[in-house]
Image 1 (spheres, helix red, strand yellow):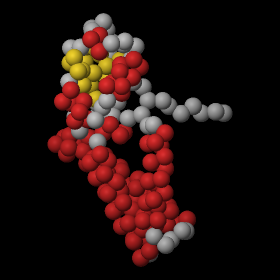
Image 2 (image 1 turned 90 degrees about the vertical axis):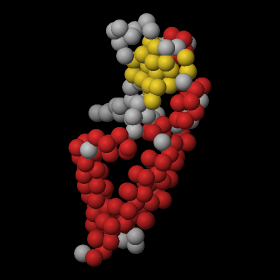
Image 3 (image 1 turned 60 degrees about the vertical axis):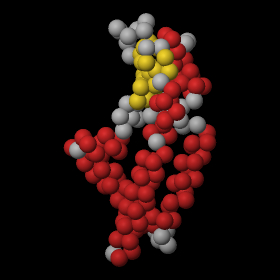
Image 4 (image 1 turned 135 degrees about the horizontal axis):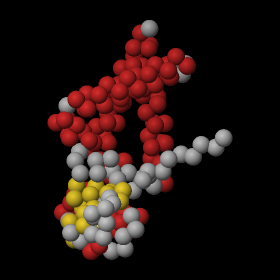
Length: 168
């Protein structure tokens, strides 16, 4: 039982550490993953595994660690849902990147979004030039929403995350 409590404590510490790192490095990291980001996440998960379970390589140790992660995540999300001030701190707020066809350079620099990245994003939404964009907004989840002048009365374009295809 003592080993399982140690695993629970180690897992909680790693969860809190990773949450703090994600907050520190910004919400842009949560949007679409590049190959470099995918490799980083795979290596990160492997690097913290031993820190969570310690010397225990048992099935019980892995299950306790996974259960603690699920419980912490569930508790944290519910806590943020009820506390709007902390939700804004942890999840951030939308950031205006393009306003009435003009780049908001200070916000692009602060969020470390390059010209090529913003152009790629607006093209994904079927818009060809910055001057055609009424608003482009970096959302708290890391996606960029684009509202064009042409469609501002009718449609909001939002990049869709790819969903896995289930093969039966």
